[in-house]
Image (cartoon, rainbow, N blue to C red):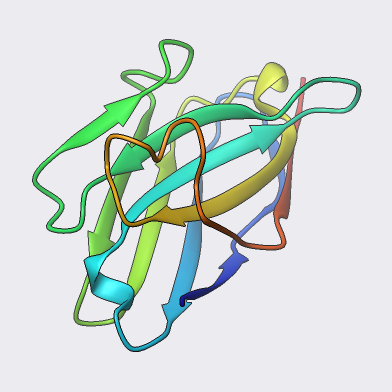
Amino acid sequence: QVQLVESGGGLVQAGGSLRLSCATSGRTRNMFAMGWFRQAPGKDREFVAAINWSGGSSAYADSVKGRFTMFRDNAKGTVYLQMNSLKPEDTAVYYCAADGNFADIRSTPDYWGQGTQVTVSS
């Protein structure tokens, strides 16, 4: 079991930056692969980024490559999503997710956070 709590969302102008955080808790929290997903109004939830338990492997959606970076601090039990060069189309609710298998994190995560709103104004 792992619990996930996101923070760091907000309103930012296009071209700006935000850093999202996902605090994890649970006895085996550092053994999980972690991911970020987002859902814009009227759209399906989509994969954004993922990282394995050690931080040694990561994956990104094409739409955010070169702009977003995901990393984790296992000592703090926290994962981050650094978002730079934000665009209005990045506006969405961002969700943190966890799964025991890095190969599955993009499709069927076992655990979800409650989400945090990111709004990018033009």
